[in-house]
Length: 133
Ligand code: HEM
Image (tube, rainbow, N blue to C red; front, side, top):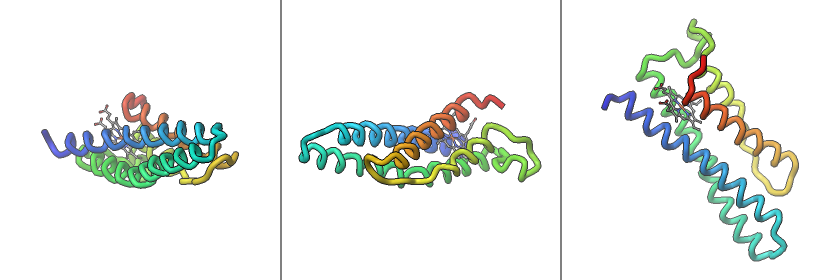
């Protein structure tokens, strides 16, 4: 196995881990918001904080491994900034960097940020796999 493939596998596995963290946070926060039992709310918020820490710690590593994979494969990941056309990789990086970490509970802005974050990661995930342009 070459270096590019090793980096890509590590990158893809951790990428899936981000999706797991986002879905886990979504489900636990949703359940906490619906719960009327204060002990259950406390437990669920504690669990959602575990998912939140996955969502905070892993993305920079995924970005680093993604860029390292691109370099190992000789791909111009900066697209037009490197004189290359706009492709799936450049668009992915732009979308990825547009995600802002927002923390909170039962708040419309936080909910909107979480929806955007999950949608953006799913779009990047689909771009990674399909490489449509
Ligand atoms: C902006 C950040 C990212 C960069 C720079 C990046 C870069 C790359 C590169 C260069 C490849 C290799 C493509 C190939 O060998 O054909 C790749 C593959 C992959 N990436 Fe990313 N990636 C990023 C974000 C993500 C995220 C957030 C996920 C998951 C949610 C993800 C999941 C994957 C998967 C599953 C593959 C394997 C696709 C395949 O081999 O068909 N990537 N990525």
